[in-house]
Length: 264
Image (spheres, rainbow, N blue to C red):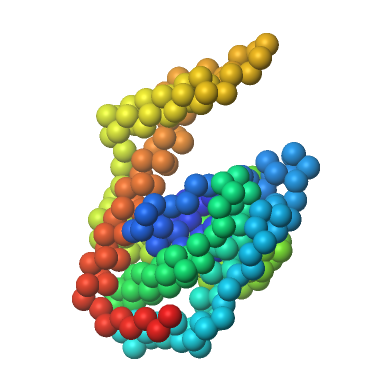
């Protein structure tokens, strides 16, 4: 199950992997929503098991996987992110037929955790904090984005192995980083030209998919709505991309000046 969120997505694996994907080879393709799978009579959790005979390989992972300016990133922190992301990638392998590259996933995971730690340290140095109300608002928005109530969202995350207190910690971290990036490079806005470009790209992609997968006896795909009708979604897409790029840029800059040791 992969949850879509605003800004830096926490996903089922937490905000760490989402950050690393920005600076690596690009974020992995989004897995099917849990509700979509349920509608097709599929069990999202079972899909990952069927997709791959692999199990998460944590053999040889040290108790401390990295140190960032004197702060340790522990095996427990690493394991929670790694196992959750592994489940998502195993689901995706059902479509691709390729096994999960666990060596690459381990590297991506530890680099992501390092990036988040650097950003949180920088936020602390700048006196940037989030309130309990900020966390509740962000949690409610995240749940709404996934078409769930906050209670159902927390229950779903619990099923994925992330207890409520950890979810709230991740959301607080996400909000802290978002405030930091806003302070550094914001505000993030979408111009009319950028919205038009995003719209044209989405329309082109839809037309290509329609041409590749025609459905007999009926229209292959719904006609693209007018730009004005999808403007809010396009604005979120454009500003979200700008925020992700600014986040990656700041993390890279902090990494160059940081004292980082990786033990993995």
